[in-house]
Length: 368
Image 1: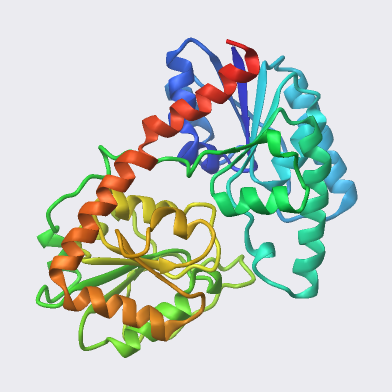
Image 2: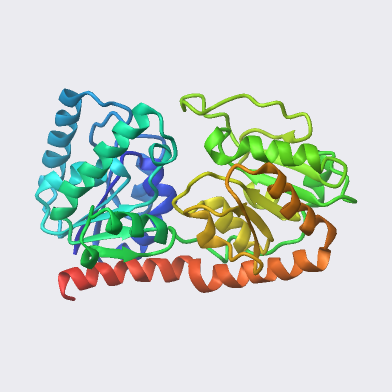
């Protein structure tokens, strides 16, 4: 089997699809990573995955440039003689349908900010995306969704036919790598954290859609009861990026020691407005942490309210603070929720489970 994975970022394929690609190589398949050259482009060679470059402008809405991108994809894919072309993210999902692949599979990893905001530009682009999927999905054998809300929306709006829709929750998480571990004492010292108070952690890009303001307001309410940490880069190229007042939060910026940071927290928080399935929640759940997140698409896939965490209403810092406070006050509840988080990650999101589900889709399409 010759299979190509198409995305607008090599980073996307490397971080979220590599496990599937490696397993396919292991099974004797020829695997291609089709993406613009970036930081991770050459890394695929280490796993006997062939990296193939094409040109795309991720932010462009210029019709002439977009037609060039479609032509680039069509020519690039056409030269590979693939049995399956599997695309990810909006533009590759839509433009990949023009590649005349024998078997085309789309994965909707999340719908993004245009499905959150209701300004005129967001409404116009949202309708363009919907129209794009209506047209492109006709050429797709299957359309895979990472959360049930997005799948339901596409079916309810007649964007795709129900028989093509498949739910495979998340991109999976390596539960062996992200396993429960003791608090990293050296890190606590480096960060000057008093371990007498519970540590509340949020990891996300610093944009409004992630619920940064709600987290900061909750920290203001609970500032004497816990230590609040925030990890994430300021996404200056994003229209919703901003520089908040971190007065009651230790802002650590971009970090690579994610496992160690999750290890030192007692409660993990993500009050995001909408997600595909957030990787940070999967990492926290896999490491056995109680979670407070919002009752929104993507986030509620990881947290069962009252089982392994709490769901708070969207854009409500007061209720968010109340949910966090319940966990601050009750260490037994934190322990129970943390145990349940780990069990949920093992049963639903383990990378081996997710990889096997994708491979089952390919085998069904090819009649293997």
